[in-house]
Length: 429
Image (cartoon, rainbow, N blue to C red; front, side, top):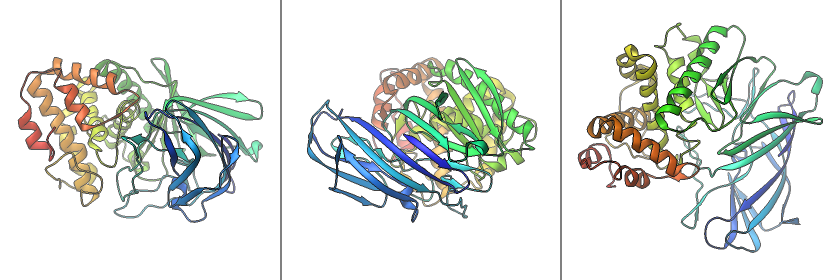
């Protein structure tokens, strides 16, 4: 993608090329792309579209679904090149009670490009997977992809500080950002950002924050460094990219993307100088998504427990490893953290089934963490962590399912865990 951003006007013009390889095992007559900016009126303007160099007229853009009818079938293992030019006029950030805060868009303090480009959605068992947006949770499913993003500003003399998913390098008048095997690519820009950085293994971690939050931003950075060390050891696989950016959001929510996470503004306000606070829990949670979302993906709409329960339980693993005296606090803090204690019995619900943010979060995140903790107690630490490492290894770069989770688990223990499935799940696995 070549992106020319007008920071003052909160807009961008994009020239995007997608090289799509057909790994479905069957010929494809069409492609389906997600175009999330089209949710906002007058945000996405399509200027041109061609396939393999030929302009394409046979397409439909309905909501966030762009369907391309190919002029000839795309054979298995063959590739197709889609070239799209479009403009973005970003919407203002909004936060409504009972609805997940909007991250894509701009405020007076920052400009966030999240899920901002058309991308080919996964094709699983012959079906294109593109779910509808919901009031909470995530609805998109991503194949892994390689990204090259070239960015420049219309007013380079007053260019903002840029946080991104990728590693940056100069490219003439552009700055090139690259990311390999990522699920998403995010850009966040602000003229107010300050930044700390630290080394974690082979990666550089950056903490972008607004003025007056130096102590909290430094604490978040150090917690992420510690979490990466713990997760690399426990999960048997290091962090997978060269950089990682922690970005203070001008909204109150945490959200994971490839190589970049947003942190809730309120968490910085509530930082108390100890590990027992929201800032640290959210930091290590979002850091864990670089394993459970980024390396091992899932259908976030239909089986969200496969990344959220893992990220929540990764908080437990962090605290027991680094701050064991705070572990009991962590379990007890959860209801205050999400604003209630209502939950549903079944962990394997979709985002559409929970009936509200509080029961969704307590069920998928906290009850899911209880399941993983009970499973660990039942089969023992050795089997539990051997399973997690094998599960991560086998599903790395893929889209995991509940069925693959239990299939791999059964190869690591002879212990009967059917009682846990009955207790925590509505489906049989």
